[in-house]
Image (cartoon, rainbow, N blue to C red; front, side, top):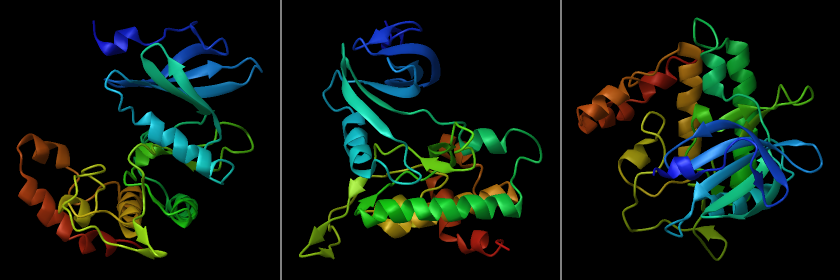
Amino acid sequence: MQLVDQFPKNGDIIKDRYKIIRTISQGKNRMIFCAIDLQMQLIAIKMENDSDGHAFICVESAILKILDKSNHIPQFFSYGSYKNYKFMAYELLGPNMIDLVNYKKPYKFSLHSVLKFGIQAIETLQIIHNQDFIHRDIKPGNFLIGNTQGTFGTFYLIGFELCKKLNKKDGKITTPTNKAKFRGSLLYASLNAHNLVELGRNDDLISLLYILVEFHNEILPWSDVDELVKNLDFERILSWTQASQMASQTIP
């Protein structure tokens, strides 16, 4: 039986508090549900298999606790265990930026919308970076809009499972000497990520820059990355990423 088949079903109740209503998204080892708690409030529940004892959701919930009540960060409610899974309950949000940009042609945003999103996204990264965290997975699918009338124009950042604390010594940032593993999304990863260099705050900003260019121009110079990966043409991906000035020159 596959792991996804063992996840809760619609109508199941988690910890005598959260009733599953529907599935929002699912992957091999994790699922996100829309649920309702005892206070009759709609929430989101992210659940991850913990069979190997290394659930990323542990990291994500700890970071959301620290960032709780911050602007552009979903409100954190609780964290716990359910059968062989770890789960996190947090504020239910609306669609992500991929859903929004693909809603209708021409599959790109106006300059006004790009700037509105960009300003809020920079504010969000500033909040995270001021807490000495690096997100390391900045991509359109991790930015969502609010789910209420009062928050529908507000953007929120999720996906903190790859987030990391900055290395500091005596209050100063130190640069690790060991080679890092690749982190992030191939399409939006910075040159440092492709070169397996430990990521910093600037890499979050570079990934955001790529998103803004794509939202305005509809495409990045390396947007056929999936086909390149299929053919294992990593050198071509890297060469195009090195030419990221091509993208920045197209910004109005």
